[in-house]
Length: 433
Ligand SMILES: Cc1cc2nc3c(=O)[nH]c(=O)nc-3n(C[C@H](O)[C@H](O)[C@H](O)COP(=O)(O)OP(=O)(O)OC[C@H]3O[C@@H](n4cnc5c(N)ncnc54)[C@H](O)[C@@H]3O)c2cc1C
Image 1 (tube, rainbow, N blue to C red):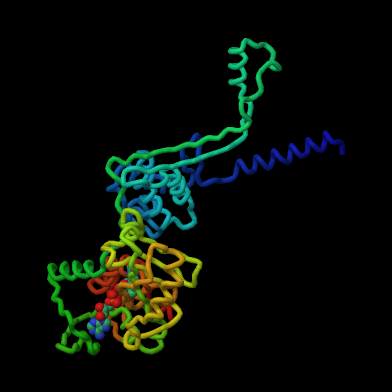
Image 2: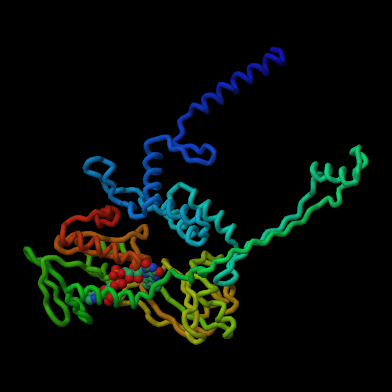
């Protein structure tokens, strides 16, 4: 085979492969920066995004245009399209901070898709570091070889009236150093730190709302027992006896004690300790103020990760932080509610001192609380296996508080309609067999 024939053969095979790849089906493509949806799926999602960008009120979880004419609830992370649309609108308006927040939220529900994450990084790089509540700064510096620029040479030649290139002077410098500072001004101010609620006040607000809507609150009563007889449930407390057609039990760490031992054994109650350490000085305390210090979860090079909050009080109120432990099980009855000096010292030496030099070993406050954990950190929302008129709801596992509104909606649906539009199959007790 001659070299020319071999090259021709390679060219023919290469062209065929290129042709096959070109014919390959793609669900969407970008042409001149314009998104061209190709498949049904791509058209559908593009339409949802455009509808939402044009009119945020068009944001829908129930779509009457699929499974027409009945319509259907959307089962995938349906907020993704909306958040991406919202984020891109902010980005086009150069509203970097809301764009980053919307991309971060979209990224949460994105699954495999990395578009939101990528966009978030790009905007964060543009935005740079926050200097104060109105200014952020992004700096970059480079030091690189300079290559002869033909335009400069032509200009040089003209200025110096030179004809031959050999007569041109050598480059003025062989390296270029460049420093760029971009300032972004936020005339309305950057958003203040958000991201935590005060649970006691939330519970208070929820109770007040329930009472305003007609609920009878029976506070500071301990349920001693509940039984189902025929079409009603009887609840006995240390103060009274109540009858109802249905009962919802949301007893947190006490719930396992209300189930049979084989089901109860699927729950693990763990002791958690929260600490408030005092800063070393007023200046050090100021570094933990909400304007400068975030709400965070930090995977340290230590056995457990920690989480914490900015300081919301004065020096003597300390700075709150805690770990999460899942190794030692306990019960609400047997848990130790005291925190000894050795435990405080160990916490300080392992998790505080090496990572927060501004915090002193003085622990101004500590508190013990309980996590209720089930396999996979999931919730339990189901009918009690022994009493069909009793619903057990355990938004447990250390992350349930924020879901109170939707869990409330679900149990209300179950009580009033016998079913809910939310998919709660993963939260059934039956999954334990
Ligand atoms: C330290 C810590 C940090 C957390 N951080 C977060 C967070 O950042 N975000 C988040 O979303 N979630 C968080 N959680 C989890 C959240 O607090 C729980 O998921 C949520 O409180 C569970 O709600 P619940 O109603 O099921 O149980 P609980 O809030 O435990 O309420 C159960 C109630 O039932 C009462 N009770 C029990 N038995 C009886 C009885 N026999 N008679 C009468 N009353 C009874 C108890 O007194 C209690 O008031 C955290 C939990 C802890 C402990």
